[in-house]
Amino acid sequence: MSTLKKLYKTWFETQENKWKTGLVGMIFITVILALVFNHEANAIQVIDEETLKQLTEQMSVGGRITDWSEFSVTNIILDSIEGHSNENSEDDYYIEITHPNVLEVTATLTWQDEPDNGARYSNEPDEFSISITPPNGTGVTSDTQSNGRVSVEISFIPQNDPYFNGTGEYIITVQCHICGDQTLRRPSIGFFDVDDTGNDWTLEIGYTYYREAT
Image (cartoon, rainbow, N blue to C red; front, side):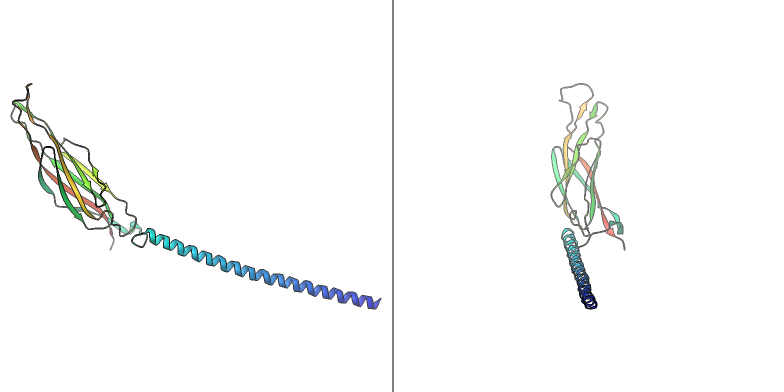
């Protein structure tokens, strides 16, 4: 009985050592796997950050995303242009904007019709419109007006600094349409009407842009 008991004790200790060895082995393997997966996760995270950085740089022409709250909106008024247009004509005028980050360009045309040619006549109004063609070639045109003033504007939404879509040469086109004649107040067949062949005008141009605060 004593010998059998010793054999049993020896077998139990052997199995216990094997169990402990297996448990330690499992714990060791678990730790190794955790370290490997943690390393892989960190590597993936680094790759994602690098990819995001590259995509951001590609999307941003200036190389960085701009916080426009650090900029101030600056208004520039160019020298006015005095001119004359004949009836049913177009005249182009060229301006150069050198600042980047342009927000808006506005052109305003004003004119004054001739007074009535005496008590017997009534002067019909002249009609003008105006258009802006920016450097990228996609222009805008105002409605035709006959009240002595017409204005048109074109806007940009800067994405980054510097933003050059609104920088460059602009074409401002003054379009003179019908110039109303001096007509008799009494009905007539038009023999005594006085032709109006054109009108003088003043062109004012201005623009706004983002300027970095200093």
